[in-house]
Image (cartoon, rainbow, N blue to C red; front, side):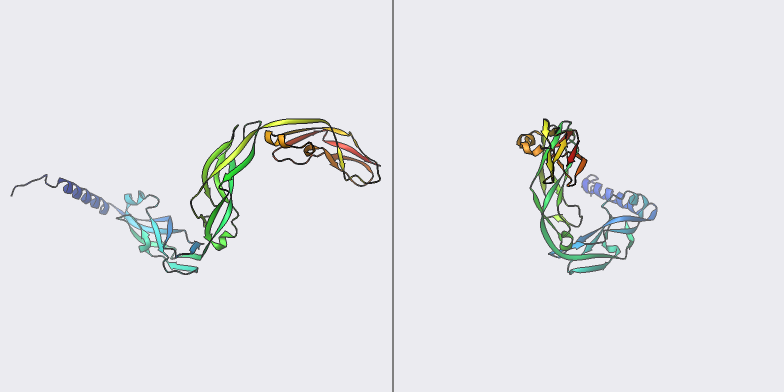
Length: 299
């Protein structure tokens, strides 16, 4: 029979490669190592139930070739727990070496803790508002006049007990640092509590309206005396002040003249009082009043 050295060359090369791999796997110094922080994953969670207060990590003792163990990547070692058939309440399950998934050539000699604990609770859901997270400040002379988010609400799912303390979902950060125009970004939505999740993975469209600030000044604005006692003569010195306000352009255009009338809150007893002058608070606006105080005389 003729010899055909190149017949089935592909199979021969594969066999040689496999043999080489096995040789490297079983040869070399074998060592034992302790690996902490191995994630515990729970499979087959019963329908309508959710996990809370669970053991999340384990420590695994392994044996194998030193070089292979040193090359282990995160995720190559995993502890898998089967929850099929479990009922609501506190669950305690023994932890065994055969529940650890490891690469070929590495063996598990021990795993700790000796048991995992978790609580299975009835699953529930709740609709919560989405709270946009905005970072930074607009350019000088500009202000973030309004922040909107779409969708405005999302559905959060998880153990009913944990949902009671959940008041909102949050977005990924949206930066407006140095912005001079409206900023719009589509970002991820999530919840802070790692034991909860969104019913459907969601993104949200966050819009931050950036507007230029405008100034308006009212000279000789008469000070209103609030709470002046009846039957007595009450005067302010000086009687007028200068009020300057800085607001977003759209806000300023909608302000009525009474929105920034200066006033003082007057004491009811006769005497002379040095009192601060105020105007009503206006969202996204700052005010300066000169002079900042007046002398109120009650006779």
